[in-house]
Length: 154
Image 1 (cartoon, rainbow, N blue to C red):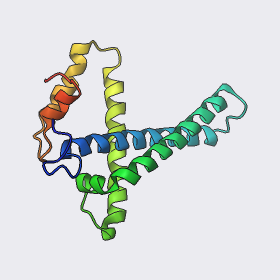
Image 2 (image 1 turned 60 degrees about the vertical axis):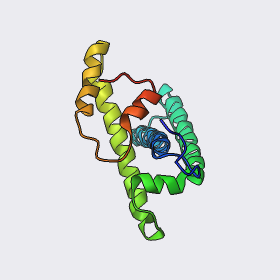
Image 3 (image 1 turned 30 degrees about the vertical axis):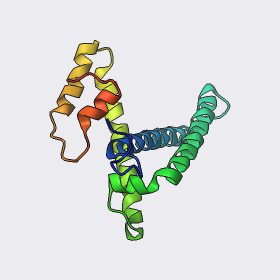
Image 4 (image 1 turned 120 degrees about the vertical axis):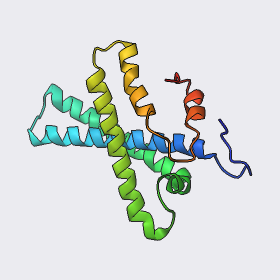
């Protein structure tokens, strides 16, 4: 996998996909922590083990926000190229798209964790085989990305 584009002025599309994946996973984690924390607030848990866990979730959420801010500073333009059209007039669309993708990543993680609970490795890999049956419609070199992370071909 190439990490730098051909004219050596920026990261490659695949490297930008990795950055977008990090941002989406972190944002998905923030969404999950925020919703769980709000739910604990709604039931009024105070001074209990759950309240301690809520404080930890809130701290994790703040750390996620800081990581996203740092990544956005350096990778806002490449992220626009990966996710949606660039341009000031599309900022709201880009932000909505980012939120939607983070929610989708969170949904995939929740589904995979729920349906694979207790399954042996070989059965868990069937989930990925099903996903890999979808045709890649972008210019992203998916086999190279999977090789970069040493994911097994399936």
